[in-house]
Length: 604
Image 1 (tube, rainbow, N blue to C red):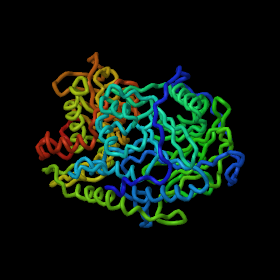
Image 2 (cartoon, rainbow, N blue to C red):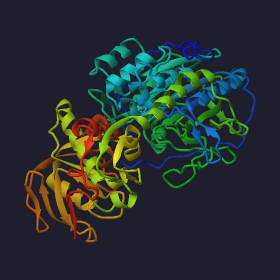
Image 3 (cartoon, one colour):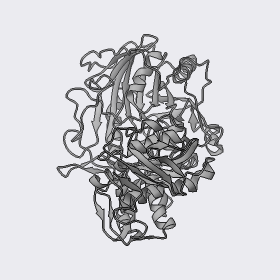
Image 4 (cartoon, rainbow, N blue to C red):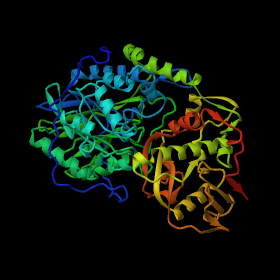
């Protein structure tokens, strides 16, 4: 693996030193209305030469949300796009092209991997290789933030990843306290995970600060990691410490889930020159920028197109460019900015700044890195292809996952998926320190195969087709019964993705009745009545298993919004495959899961 872990020829990280936090300033709260954000127009087309009189031109290359999308895509015309190998080649080409003009930095925004078949190649193919780590090393980033998905398989898996990647790259995480997780704290102690770092390129020093979303506890399997929600206070303290150390050119790389959050943060910042946003997957581009087929420019909270870059006024009067990419190895962001001799950002080169598509066609076409093809893409593709022949169960009955079926009525497959959530929730409850779930809810829109799986073999690939999203099993251990009934009432409305497939209870409802009055009867599997004659007869709380997506109130499940829940380190797909192979012993019987279900849902 020496080819992918070769010495980097571009900028090298120096002094990866954690800087002391100062007094907190104003926190950014998700439920607080943000003040109007002063978006400052960028002066049009500034392809000026490197500034004179001690100034410097920086080319900042960036990416985010790579999320284990290691394999290339094939577009409608049959051309290959994206993929880790072509991405690495493009990043190196842009780095080499920019180097004669001044310093170059390459930064990543976190979410470096994501559970799914491509990450499972690392976990389950028996080679011991972590292919995402090899791809990361091939890209030769100078620093990276940490995202929510980087904790999805528990802090220990993140520690495995940190062990696998090159120790040259600092992971910047100023608002994370990792002291409760010994393996991660060890990487703090050895300087791998830092609050901020200093990177040198072409004789210039740049500070890089990292932030991660305060929503982590609701998004992932955080373990004993703690998050400081005071984003502005944390970033400003780090910027001040960097300035005191003589570093006046500062980049903030932040994983806040939506670029609007970074835009809202900038007016509270001091001493930050550029913000690289991550977590939202937005496409930022300016008129004339080439995009991959099918991509369109995203819009901001007001509905305006997101220009690359979007320049926002900061608390200290600075004009701060904010940039991001859509992730998934599909673009290399390229921001070119000019600093004066005092380290103040004075201009953005709009002509040179753009998202560069990772493509095999057109002016930006690049051939994939052959080492990454051989050492990452080929073994991952072989594993994914092998999933189709890996039999995890045999079904004695067809399993109906058609869109119009799972979104409107009970089906055997819908019940099977709901049962898998209940089983996974119960299996993981003790380790998570929560009450075992009694019931489970699965939205029909999360069942995606849109077909009837015929009786016969069920493959591992089938489980990904049924539940392809990177949702995690989660348990709300003390959900008020009133909220549970309201959630079932919402899920009883037929025809939408929110229609609920259920486990652990049965109910009778009128799907056409007004919301709030649909459920007429609801009885737990042990016979306990919850709703009788349209009236709730049970008080207290109940432990509910679902997916994290629903427990955050998504898909219209407002009754669940705000409920306390614990995310388990088990994806929805893993829960389904484990239930088929282990709980059912590899056999789906017609008695347990008839095609139309067993009568858990009765519709009036």
